[in-house]
Amino acid sequence: MTRRAQNTLRHRAYFEQLDAIGDDAHPDFHTVAAGLYALRLFDSWVLDGCGSAPPDARQLGGARRAVAEAPPSATMRVLGNVVEAIATAQGVDGSMVLPALLAYARALNFEARWALAQDVYDTIISVSSCVTDDELLLSAMHMRGYTMRMQGRLDEAAVAYKQLRMAAEFVGETKFVMEARLSEAKLAIDRGNLPRAEEKLEELLAEPAIMVRPALRSKVLHDRSTVSGRRGHLADAVKLAYQALELCKDPASRDRILTDLATTLCSMGQWDGARDAFTIVAATAQEQHIRWAATNSLLEIAFLERRQPLFDQYRRELSDAALPPVLRVEHLYLVGKGLRTFGHVAEAAEALSKALAMAHEHGLNELAFKAETLLENSDAGLPELPISEYSPDDGVSEVLGGIARMLESARS
Image 1 (tube, rainbow, N blue to C red):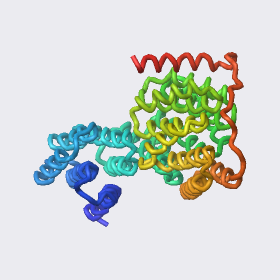
Image 2 (cartoon, rainbow, N blue to C red; image 1 turned 45 degrees about the vertical axis):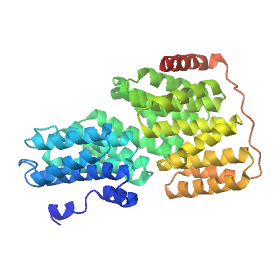
Image 3 (cartoon, helix red, strand yellow; image 1 turned 90 degrees about the vertical axis):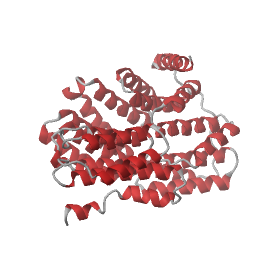
Image 4 (tube, rainbow, N blue to C red; image 1 turned 135 degrees about the vertical axis):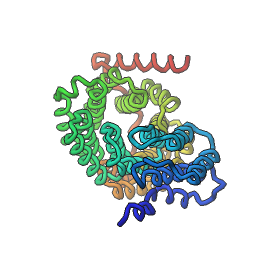
């Protein structure tokens, strides 16, 4: 099959989303269409000579018009940069086209448009023979696996991370070798294989390459905290998460750490601290799916505290959101628990059945087990709001004080 024939099959995610939207009067239609126009312009431009010739004037004009017709947003500004980079570029390597394209993919990540983001990363990787920027291509490979994880496509993500690791080893990029190994540990967490995840993360913490990279060490500590929390070692989870937060400088990563830290505090019965942390994240997080996760957790606190109006409010906020599979299953599971708490047994069973079916569909074994267990014990009462069993000696008080200061700063 020729390169030109292959191009006719490209960007299926965009065509599928346009077909799902249907009506071109919908704002999302023009946003997705603009992305498709820009990507087809890029395809045409690199088709012959890796971008050595100027772009086709007709296609360039079409891409510019499509971006202009889309509702203004940060993502559209980034996409406009892609189009203008192509307009002024002299070859792929000598331009800002691929960095601009990578920035567009990351903007889609922030909007939780995982399938579209994966398409863009695939596009970057497809022209690897035209470029010499190893770090950019490895970043695209890494994030491609991430978008697969967020879509619940764990087997495909495992293959993507293996490819990343092999490519990084080949070019001697230690940072991305470590990122690939860390991502493999994340997959073990997603599959519920916590002993295997813990083993992989402990191996990483002992690596000299991790010790000298605070950002990477923060990521490993964060995931190690997640494993400790899921295995019931809550005080350890809090301490590890706080260490990760102190090392982390990236705002989006800090959002994720604070979210998981709040989740652990919730499990410990530290409701005020957990609520404060989730409130910060729901209001300020950069990534849409992180804000969704924080709202989901506020929903959980609401039913644990028997506050049905708040529970119903958060449930409405997430009912039509395009949640990724893992978060959707978690949401349905929590909705089921909440509905049972408030005496709506039939509705609870329906939500839990949906959670179980989706968990099986995406290989989310731990969540499937939790939903199935609750379904099989439909007559069992739910516990009252837990009381914290943890004293300040557990190191919790330091974390609570830090969160309180963060919330005060966010409100000022």
